[in-house]
Image (cartoon, rainbow, N blue to C red):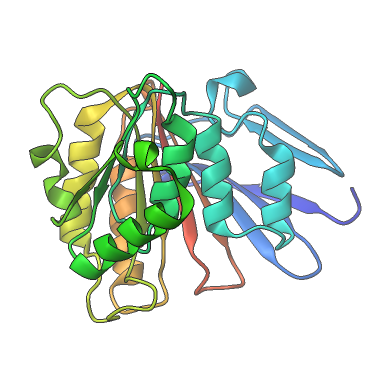
Length: 267
């Protein structure tokens, strides 16, 4: 316990924020709310786990059971994308339909496919990216890492993520929509996701998501427009109904360019 120090703060936009300070970094966990609420009722901490509940049981959140992994992230042992994948595993089932809204180089697409593919062939991954290069990289990675039968479960589309509803069959039950916001790693840094298109994509995701589904975002803020896009994501999450959504953010406070994790869970 001596290695960690906790404090809480409260404002109308963030219903509660838990700060965890270690010798090397300061880490923020925030729950978004659309209205002023009471601070969290329970905070339990031990040397190997961190559990945060907000007036409900811990198993009402997709983060339940991830305490050790999150502490690994706090101590710099796991990347933001690794934590995102761990959360997905607690939400997804074999046969689910998921959307990779920003394929990039395909690593998220492959991770999703491994989680939903089964012998029934019902699982589907819809991969979207505005850059042809990204889809080519994703297709090549699939060729290298999965079977041809598994690859057939992936549908790739060269469109903006704001138009995802145009490529999915009507009334498709989606359990996960994942975003890696920013630019294509190794590609043209001048081509980035924008606040306007990301907001449209979030609105579309909200309509598609089934109960128990998740919108997952890794927001990169170290490029022009990145901080504005994070603010757009925060405003969207803050405006969601408290009774229907659990929204939280994980952010390194003394590393301003570190990616920010946002999870929006439909309960």
